[in-house]
Length: 428
Image (cartoon, rainbow, N blue to C red; front, side, top):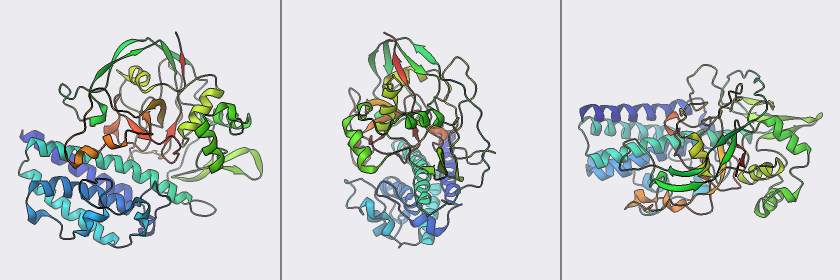
């Protein structure tokens, strides 16, 4: 038990430190801006993740002298937990200039001090579970922090400023995509929360059985070069390729290419891309990234294929090592951008990292799923409507979130997250 408590304390400290490292390259002005309603300021992410521990751990511990003496923080930094109380509207988070950056830093330091003391004294298993959830929650916000600041920096006129000064080396050609056959049959999917002692979110279970038919997955992600061919063939102007909702969304928002792509005014065949290392030419060998589910589905139709279901993806990923180009900001050469797949091996490539992979599956509860009691029950269940599942993780995803059962979800029109495309086809 002592070793488990120490492991939890170490994990808490490591996760909190990473958030501060990710925020460190940003100026105070960078950290307060909100570039669209779906995004949040870096300052808000730093405060909200702290609020989670203050609200659900320190407040639940019942030790009042551990609490922060600014009650307005409960209103400002609650995200969507209606059971906790009123909250500041999400689209207006960028208008909150007070508390200041230094006050938010003090808030984080205070909660970290109290959490460290609490963990040193030992906590009950139920509270330890909430703390573990809080660390995974903060890792989700580390990914959001990078997604959101990428969007904010892209709003700067002319040339978007860089988050990182890492020099990007041109990618090697990954070669043509090949099909990898996967046998159908009955498959167990999801997590057995009672039998599996590792952390997982409630929406990853209960484990249940599904019927799959023989299928095949592309052995790598769709590349930017292949997407340029889709554009050149009129992919954004051909309604027969698109679902109706996607077609009209594309027209309304003027989509002609993935998010962050900009046409070269002097060369009709060349594209530029905004990345966290600045503006550069689109590398045709890298995976295409920042496309919506609607675009992914239209591309799959154009290519004579389809998107995989989330259960097909999980079946194919089960047994593969959950490693890949995920968030590792301290690794030499890490560029905060998807990398090329590498040479073909006859097996699946890029199943983890680089880009979240859109599936054709709606984000719905598994059979037997039930929402937990209290405000914590609002974590996932309330979002199971109108959203699509993505699998595999991306270059902004912390390594602890790479597993075959992890279900990410976004609305089908969204593009600012690092999402890409893996094709599937029938074999029955």
